[in-house]
Amino acid sequence: VHTVAQRMAWLAEIDTVMLDCDGVLWRGSAAIEGAAEAITALRRAGKRVVFVTNNSTKSRASYVHKVEETLGVKAAEEEILCSAHATAAYLQRRGVRGRVYVVGERGLCEELRAVGLETLGEEDGRIPFEASRFREEVDVPKDVVAVVVGLDTEVSYRKVAIAACLARRGPGVVFVATNKDVTFPGKDDLVLPGAGSVVAMVEAAAMRTVDATLGKPAQDMLDLADEAMTLDRSRTLMVGDRLDTDIAFGRRGGLRTLLVLTGVTSRAVAEALPKDEAPDHVLESIADILPLLA
Amino acid sequence: VHTVAQRMAWLAEIDTVMLDCDGVLWRGSAAIEGAAEAITALRRAGKRVVFVTNNSTKSRASYVHKVEETLGVKAAEEEILCSAHATAAYLQRRGVRGRVYVVGERGLCEELRAVGLETLGEEDGRIPFEASRFREEVDVPKDVVAVVVGLDTEVSYRKVAIAACLARRGPGVVFVATNKDVTFPGKDDLVLPGAGSVVAMVEAAAMRTVDATLGKPAQDMLDLADEAMTLDRSRTLMVGDRLDTDIAFGRRGGLRTLLVLTGVTSRAVAEALPKDEAPDHVLESIADILPLLA
Image (cartoon, rainbow over all chains, first blue to last red; front, top):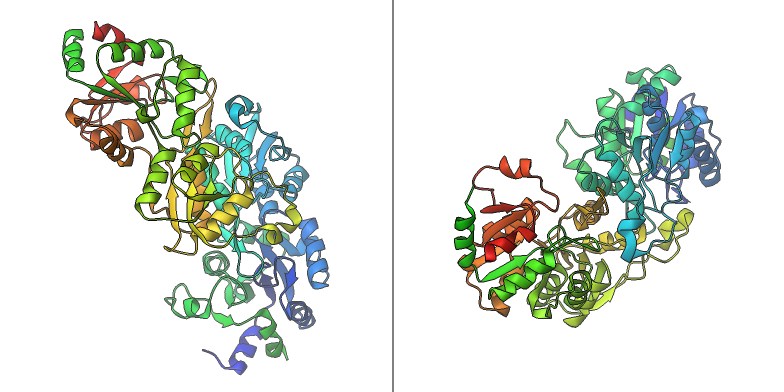
C-alpha cells in the first residue's frame, strides 16, 4: 500500500509505459472508461507509450487501426508489440524460409508474409467437410517447414489434423505457438477460448509440444522492443490485467509492474499473492493513473 | 513366445472374445484381410464375439450396420460396447436429466437421446461465424446440466466456447469425455486427431478437467458387459491394437489380452515392454487366430 505522493514519485521515474490491451484499454470492442485520456496524459507527461499484446489475430498495422478506432488515439506501428509480429521475427531469426502452415487468423498470416514466408491454411476452416469421408479428405501439403498456431475462430478439424500431421514429422518442422493464453474476456462475463486452447488441441493431436511460445510471459517481445528502441528497463512500467502473462512478463524482464483490475484478475486474488509474484502496484483501472500524473 | 500348440490350448480356454474395431477389424472403411473369417471361425468354435470401441461417433445401432457393411458379418446391438453408449449409461447412473451440450457427432447424440436426455450443439459447427463479431456471437444456452465431449469432425470455435463456458460453471454441470484417444489411424499412414485432442481444447478453455472418461482403459464398458451378459473374466480375451487403451483395459479388468500389429503399435514397441505392461500374446493380425482354432 502506497500513498498517492509515493505513487506520483514512482511514476515520475518511469519513461516508458508498456500497456497490455485487452482487459486494460478495452474489452473486445468496448473501450475501458478513461483509457484514452490516460494514454494522452502519459504522452503529455513525456512518457513513451507502447502497446504489448498477446492477441495473435492482428498485425501491427491492424493494431494501429484498432487503437485509433476503439480509443480515438493515434499509434504508430513501432509502438505495437504483438505476438503475430514476434512469431514472424522468431521464424526469421531461426532461418526458416518457405511454406508455413498456419492455424490462425489473417493478421498472423500478414506478419508471416511480411518476412517473406508463404502461408497455408487460411481457407482450411471454410472448406465444407464430408464427415463420413473425412479420413480421405485430409490432404497434407508438401514442403512445409513450420507450423504456427494462434487464436483462430475458424479452427476446424481439418486445420488441426493437417497441422498435427506436419508437426508430427519432427524437429525438421518448426512448431510454434503465438501465445498460450487459454482464455480471454468476451462480452459481459463471458470468457472465451484463447490461443492456448487451440494450441492444446494441436499439441495433443501432434503428440508434440511446441518448440517456442512467443507471447508474454516469454521475453521475445521485450527483446524486440530492445532492438527497436532504447529501453531502460528499470524506468519501464508494464501494465496488465493478468498475473501469469503481463505481470510475469514484466517481472522476468526487470520492469516495474502495475496490475489493473479491469480484466481477469480480482483484487482478492491480487492481494493474496506472495511477494515474489505480486505486482509493484495495483490500480482499479488504467484511468486511475491520471491523478498521479498531475 | 509360445508354440502354436500352447496358443491353441490357451485359446480353447476362452469363451468370450472382445474385439477392438479400428486397427483390428478395419482401418477406416477398409476391412483388414481375414478379419471377417476370424469372426466367423470364432463363432463357429462356440465363442461369443463382442465389439468394443472407443469411437464415440456412432451409436450401437450404427455399429451393427458398420460391422455388416465393412465385414459382411452380422452383429446384434447387444454385442456392441461403444463409448457413446457408455457415456449415456454413465449420465443415467449419475441421475442426470435434462439438457446436455454435446461436442460430438450424431451417434453420440442418438445414444444420449435414447436415455431421455435432450441434446444441444449439433448445429453449432455449421452456423456461419462472423469472426470480427465472434464475441457477440457466442450464445450460451440456459439450463444445461452436462457437457459431453467426444470426437467431432465439425468441432468449431463456437462449440468449444459454449462447452467451456458451461463446464466452467462448476460441479453442478457434469463434464465428461467419451474417450481420450488423442489420435487414430487415417488412410495410408495418416494419423488423425481423436476425441482426446478435442477434449484437450475444451478442458484448456474450461480450465477444468473432465469428471470422467468413459472409453478404454476406463472400466465402464466392461461393467456394462457384466450387466448385459454373464462374463467369466478369466475366460475372456481382449484383442486390440493399442497398449494404452485396449491392452490396459484388458489387464485392469482381469481379462486375457492379445495385441495385433495391424493398428498403431509396432512389434518393436510391443517387444520392448516390461512384463507388467505387456499383452499375454501378440499376433501380426486377427487373421492369424484362424489356424489356432483348427
